[in-house]
Image 1 (tube, rainbow, N blue to C red):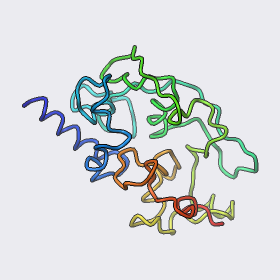
Image 2: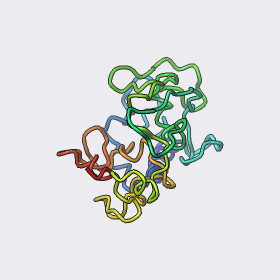
Image 3: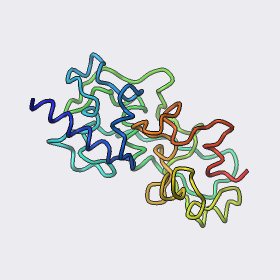
Image 4: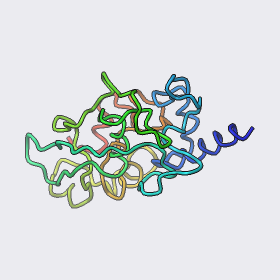
Length: 209
């Protein structure tokens, strides 16, 4: 009974991350449902990232964090083309995503475990070279939109999710992995996308082309 109660509490906590009030309903049976994986002997969905007790209180941007955080140094996007915003090392929620997807931290390194052996591979492996990936951890605000000329003003443009780009897709005006992907899959789109990308709709949410 106690284990079941902890599991339910953890599900509720997970719903707070990345603005996902109904996230717990979407994560079940999604790509991030690890409850049936052999390395997750708890059988719980959320415990890989969150815990109701003994959480890592040093991790920002995620409540009750339970997974080892990457310490890798990344090669960030630098072009081609001229960037009107500085791209820094992954931070915030992006660093948490990369704590599995960069391949330097095992997926089963959670709950204090640091010697896990199940490392992401294949298409899910982003790696530490982000030079050929969409830039993340950059400031996307009205000033950038004006300077760039090819971006919608995030403070006034509707995201299609109920409010503005800033309110729905950014993290303190920063564009992160979670701006395009919903870790809890509450939107139910392919590849955990926040906006269905049919006809490049996700791209056109921010890019004024």
